[in-house]
Length: 428
Ligand SMILES: Cc1ncc(COP(=O)(O)O)c(C=O)c1O
Picture 1: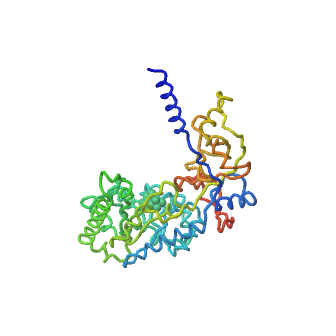
Picture 2: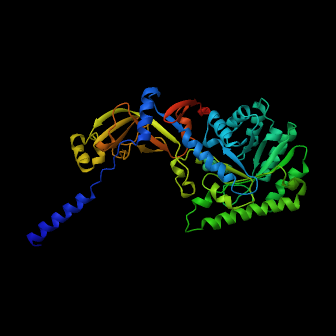
Picture 3: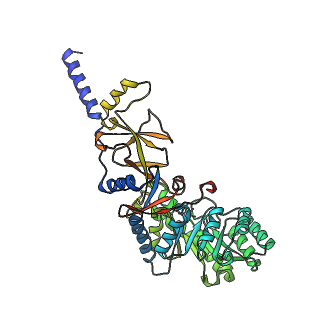
């Protein structure tokens, strides 16, 4: 190669490499987080906390309520308790949404719901082992009347037999909602012989069992890649299965069907609830996560919802340019190359199921590694955090992450207004 070509090639390569250099992704807090940071520094506990913004929560509740009114048929909103696992938070949402309907997923929390909300109508979101159901009755106290207000979820004839034995043994009246597999393939029955076997047992034992409806959960409608099947196809298929189950009970078990009076025909979840505005079969829609919109729910069907829950945690140390043990002063090459490694912060706690959110452009450091104790995050100079300022993260989901911080802090207009205990984590 001629020398001139070599020099030109090297210059082009250097220019190309320079062009690959990461840009400055850092940004200071937006006003919203700047205000929250000041509030937390003055009135917060200066440890990791989960914030729930009531102004944004109200907006999200309003969106769900409006969706319930789109169809002309009466349709009720059921709060998915596991996704907002705090007694006071559930109470707030039920009051604001004007609903008594709850979906429960965990036996100890079910007892708690029955105690806290004696007027609630509770549908189980998963089939409990008969032993857990027995424990519920043993621990139950108060005015909540399970014979009229609780719907157990049954997914197989075998479980139906076990529940029947429990009901006979303890002289209980149990309301039975049947789980249908509408395409998620997480259990439940299809219309046909399995459904008939369950209905036969209910019909033969009216002193102990009452049919209360169906549950068909369908997040796959949104989650399955479009290449495999379109959303409208999957929803149509799901509702066809649902409709077949309804028709079977209506025709073959008219006494159980009872003209549909008082039956709960539950479906949906956060990803799909908007899609059900177009159908008229279901009368009960379960939604939880969309109330606070964790990052797993950044999906087009929830475009109008706003994130309403943030982890806030103080910066414990601000140590300048990134330094990796072993690389020591050679680490400077990293911050020279990448402006987003020119400020290093160690935060209180870390490694939650969450994404860094504010200030902008903060990152984890894969060379340094993750920590649940004092996690390193880096950013550019524009992030401008000092010790005691807060880093804000968005949880990826709410049901487990909400239980990790003690009381939720409810904020309104940028001020802490209430403290909401979460359900006992040791029972989660
Ligand atoms: C039976 C059932 N219904 C509804 C939901 C929806 O919950 P979310 O709205 O929090 O996604 C779930 C979530 O797991 C579920 O299992």
